[in-house]
Image (cartoon, rainbow, N blue to C red; front, top):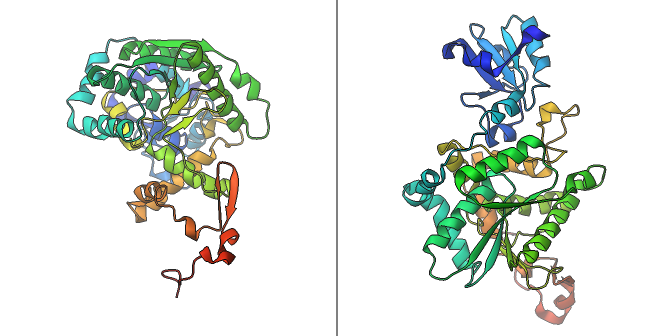
Length: 388
């Protein structure tokens, strides 16, 4: 088996035109971040398209599941290898603190595309939904991913130019990250000039043995801890990095998996922590623009670091890591091929709800059924449009 393994150092010594790198992880993981110059691995049945005049170097997250396909390719005549340590080993080598704060900030100030696509919609959401008010003390919650770290930089930029004073606390909750993910968060924060405060919890261990809805429980526990710590630090708001795509995915997920129409609000009052609010200032920011900013600046972030999904689907024996959110994300991508405006239409539907065409709806926990008013003459009396 040793001859099928290849290290990063050995790859670095190879002429660039002598090999090809292939990422065997799922599409979502590949899109989230991969080794430069790596290509997605061909789908099943298309492996014959791989070049036989080059070394074929495969990698997964930790270098465990790329071994089998590398050996399979060898039996078919390919000069194939498995990258030792996988993407995680490459990522670990990127953990060098460099002062890149000013350089990255310039992309949000002067680069037309990023100012227009990132800062402008960020500021629009804050203005439209009144998310930031004078003398607010906001806990900017950083998970370590691309979305929350960009949110931190946008908040810093907003604070420099805003007309009234407000305070920021950059809060990181460690729910039980592995060593690599913890180091990656700390390195990125130091390099980007984000003064984070980290506090520890053991949420991942607490939910790991839960069979039913562990992700739901984990999310609720994480939010509770964030509220509690933010309040302890004198904050009146917590800011989460949910973006435009999260909003529409959540809407579809509710319809397809929960049988309900439910949106994701730009701000909410906390029911368990009086006086606290949750805000989502990335509400209008598109994920594709976040990715473009990340890649332009050659930044690397953690994806999902919990015990359930910190590996890719190819690194788990049952290949079961694809979540309902990932499944919904991929569905939207497929639908977009025939309807480029579908994302905007889903988002717009949240503010164009026709209650007089709904069988029932809930408001403040109370269900209102159309039959309650129909017999009183308040129901629809005209033919519905388009149904002839």
